[in-house]
Image (cartoon, rainbow, N blue to C red; front, top):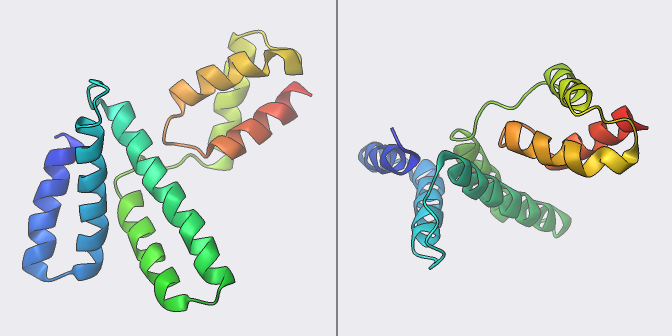
Length: 148
């Protein structure tokens, strides 16, 4: 089932359950997918693109969350936390640190990467294979450690 269909079903269920918290997060996802479909790029909404959309939503909410926490706005921060949790339910399960290290080591070995000059190649492959399963900053940090 496509993400959009799943979201529509979950919105109906949340409305019936009168779950305003979940409904807010689901509507944000639906809105982001709709915006991506009508952005004029003509790109199809593939599974990879769905993951990118969800990651972007989580990232923006985490940025807002840190601002709200700095300003001691716990009421707004709590809403952001709730939305992050709802959105993350639709992302693939993240890899553990050990699994991530194993996969990155395999990529480094496969590409015969030996120095920091090869970081671009490794990161490109890692981003394709690990889309949605690992934080890009963490991937970059581990790749640097493996190549140095």
